[in-house]
Structures are given as structure tokens and as C-alpha cells.
Length: 312
Image (cartoon, rainbow, N blue to C red; front, side):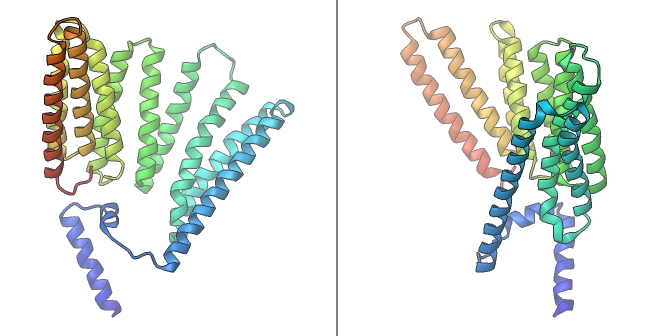
């Protein structure tokens, strides 16, 4: 029986590798009956997460109450210390299968506490130069390196997700510090999110790609619209929007398709209000816009169904 089970597992692994299927995709399509043991595990996990939330809330409240009465070093220790401990525990727990479910929560806790601790450290021990953007650059740069190195070692989707968050925050803060226009910043962050989302998909971490495709597409369209609004170059927005639709089909990404469709509907609403609101053709324009929206939504639904079970 054991040899048959091992042989079946080897065949599953071989099929998954030959078709480029990640383990999380297989898990998403597996249906497991909710046995009493499984239901008990859900309740146990819920109580554990709730208890952890209360613990951190209590620690935060305690820290705020004693904050004026402690010194700079103690402030750094109670903010940065728990974050560093959580990160180290996450690295250690990754090596033990029995602690596998605790790895991602530990990394999330570390990602929440470490930035606060680093900001406290800079505020307490680094002379204040009056530039909060510079402090943010240091914090996000350090955390990007930390999370990126951890991802290179462990290859976990949660670490890649956190790396992308801190990297995009670093890019955005850098452009704010350099006094770059907001539309250019939005376009840059959007393109970066799209490229990094595709990188995550190529690494097999499809569970996090919809989020980054959605964020990247939204930032890109918002930045382009702000850059070309009210002018002859306004038509360029439709070109970018159409490119996103094409890209969503090539990448089989429903998240990117949703962003593109809503971007197109929003632009049609803006266009009709801007150029037809004060003319007698306004009611007709509304009717036409409604018909176009229905057609666009029907076409988008058809495209979404044609993308198969990629789930992206």
C-alpha cells in the first residue's frame, strides 16, 4: 500500500512539473470533506488567530501607556524587537513541517512590526533632518533587501508578496522625494507592479498574481488618465486600456481584465459627461453609453469564461 501511494505521488508530481502546475493550484482544486476533525481544526485556528490579535492589541496598548516613561532604547526594543523575533521564528518554522501553518502569520507579523520599529529607531537615534521621505526610503530599502533575501532562500509566496510591497513602496517614496509628478509616479508604480506580478507567475506563485495585476493595472490607467486628461493626447488612454485588454488575454488574467473593463467604463462616463452634458444630445449619449457598457460587459464575461481555470 505504501509503495502504491508513493508511486501515485510521484506520478502526480511528474504531471504537475510537465504542465507547469504549482502546488497551491492543486490545493485550490482539491475538495476535502469537512470531517469533525477538520471542523475542529478550523475552530482551533480561528481561536488561535483571535488570541494572537488580542495579544498584539494588549502589547500595543501597554506600549502606548508606558511610552512617555521609557527611554529611546526601550522604545526601539519593544517595537523592533518583536518584529525581528517573529521574522527569525518564521525562518526557523519553515524548516519544521509541523509548524508550516505558522510561517506565513509570523512573516506577516514581522512585516507589520519591523517598519514601525525602524521608524522609531531613526526617530530616536538619527538626527532629524526634516525629511520623512528619506527615513521612509531607508526603512523600505532595508526591508526590501531583507524580504528579498529571505524569498531567494525559501521561495515562499508570502515572502515574495511582502518583497513586492516594500519594493513598490520604495519606488513610490523615491519619486516623491525627487518631487516627480504624481501621474508619472502612478504610471511607474503600475508598470512595476505588472512586471513583478508576471515575474511571480513565472516563478509559479499564481496565488498572488491577481492582486498585483489588479493594482498595477489600476495605477497605470489612473496615471495615464491624469497625464493626458483634457487635451488631444486623451485618446492615448484608450490605447493603453486596449493594450491592457490584450495583455489580460495573453496572460489569462481575469483581474487585469476587470481593471481594463472598469477603466473603459469610467472613461466613457467621463467623456459623455464632459462633452455632452450641456447639449440636447445628453439623454441620447446616456442611452448609447449604456448600450456600449452592456456590450463591453458581455464581451468581458465571454473573455473571462474563455480564460479557463487559470484563476488569475
